[in-house]
Each structure stands twice: as structure tokens, then as C-alpha cells.
Image: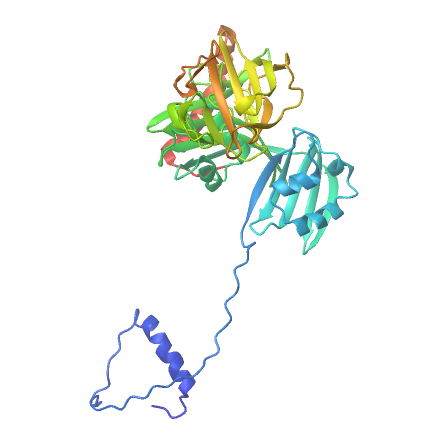
Length: 425
């Protein structure tokens, strides 16, 4: 051995042996004697490069939030998951923007956010021809307004259920808004609380709007297919000359039901309709004539159909209760509420899907959740077993228009299914 070969070099060479052994074979020189060798253990510290700490902001993703009534830029930044110190600097940069100081309900804010809560970019389309952006350069933010001409594109994406719906749509880079519209359109055929199975497949076609090749906002869901337990369900958007709009099957049958299947599209059912359940507060067995949805305080509750407010106020174990009277003998009740929606008072009219209240834990409740009842002639029935009718059909003239629009959308869904594409835009 070369005497100039230091002990440190020897240690490094020995450390590399397991790795080199994968691609090379080692032998012993001829006439080398291997018996009676004296072994010496040598321990020497070797300076190794410091491992880099995991960066909590090592990946980023796009978030889109719809602006609601009473929303402010601070409340939106909080929903987007922006770190509080980061949000303070963003608000400082946005101080001179009138548009960011008075957000318009119904419009959306699109943001690119890191996993560590840093904001990289925010886009707010004030009007179809005016865009407000907040950009980041190092740790400094800058807000500016500019006139824009947006480019419309049709986006096609697909994915497979491995756990939750939103987990699968996130993995397929489908915006939450589009996922919600798909679930809403197909809610009459699929119960997204309990019917999903691993391996279920979905495909969506939707509009998106770009500026200089960068996404500014997502548009409407145009078509969706969900293969649930081997059965395909499709929804196609159509608006007729009279302004009626909705989602239909490829045959032109409306998917809009007289009643939605759930007042909370993606909340977990924590307790179902039962003839006997052990009450966690009363400590006795009794019937549970409703469905409980686990959700945090303040989560929105929607009306499952057009209705008139029959009762609003506090009532025994229900706590804050809302009762809605629907068509015919049907009514629904919503209990344990924290508060009511805007304009909710006795005699007021509400529409299907309207937010009428918010989840709470009032009355006999161990924690925040919604207690929901479906009543026929004021008698509670299991809503999961009801057969719900459709409510709107296309007339003869509209059917021809629908068929012409439906054909390319059905072809797009077939392409996504047959070629197993993840994305196409």
C-alpha cells in the first residue's frame, strides 16, 4: 500500500466499498497471504457535509377561494393558509389598492401558496377586463392593477379515487370549485358520503381563463363522468334560450333533483338514522330520527330544496333550530346551529342550495355537528332511503340544441376514459 495513503483516505475508501460492490467485483492479488493478519481498529472523525433542514415551504400549490359576503383581504389570506407574519406584509403592500379594499362577493381569488404558508403570487379578477395582482420578490410584495384580455381554454382532467374525493382531485390538479360542481351535479345519483370506493374514476372538462399563459381563474364545469363501483354517471352543462340552465345526462334528462341528498356535500356522517342509539349526554337508548354530519363550528348549511321558513329559533335539545317547509308534505329540520343565514326569518323564501345556517353545538350536543331531519307529514323518515324526483325537463326545441352541444363533450369524456389521460389542456 502506498505509504502516502492517509488513514482518512482509507476510511473513505472503505465507506465506499458497499456502493462500489454493486457495479464491480473485488479480488485478492496472487501470492497474498491472508492468514495470521493482525487487525487494528482505527477510529477517526470525518467531516461530513451538514444535512439541510427540510424546508416547510419546499413545494407549492394553487388555491382558489370564492369571495363571500363580508369577506375582507385578511379573511381570504387566512383561508388561503397564509402565515400571519406573511399576511401582515401582504396587507401592507395592498393598502393602496381600492379593489383589494372592497372585494366583490361571487368573484374568486387565485393564489400560489407554499406548504409553509408563504404567498408567491395572488390574482384577483375585479372585472373581466381588470386584474389585480400581488407579486413577491424576495420578501417584498408589490400590488398592481392592469387591464387584461383573457384567453379561454377548455381543460380536460381525470383521476382515480384512492381515499377522499378532494384528495383525488387535488392529485389530478382539479380545482376544488370544479370538484364541488361535479359532486353537486351528480349528487342525485351518487352519495359522496358513503358510495365512494377505491378505484372509482372521474373525468372533468371545464373552462379556464389565462393571461400570458398563466391561469387567472377557472370557469364553469362543462362535463363530468364519475365511474362509481363500475357504473358510469355523466353530467353535461346546458343553458337553453329561455335562460334555464343545469346539468343533464347525454340523453337530455335533467340531473337536478327536487331535493338534494345532503345539506352538507362533503361532511362525514357521524350518526345515521336509527331506531335505537345510545345518547352520549342522556346516557340512555332511544331512537335517533335524523342524520348527524360532523363539521366544524361555522361550516355552512344549505337548504336541500326550495322552501319557506316555517320555524327559526331555539327548541329544547335541538338548540338553535331551523325548519323549512317544502312542496307537498315534505319539510326538513336543521339543529344545533351556531347562527342563521342572512335574511332567514319566519315566512321567508329560500332556494335550493342556499346557505341558510351554520354548524354549531347548541342544545344537547357533545360537540359541533349538524343534526338533520327529513319529515313527511311531520314524521321523521330516513333521507338516505328516499327516491327523489327530477324537477326540470328540456322541451322539444331545446333537445336539438342540447344534442349538438352534448356530442363533443361526450367525445371528450370518452377520450379521457379510453386513453386514461391525467390531463389535457
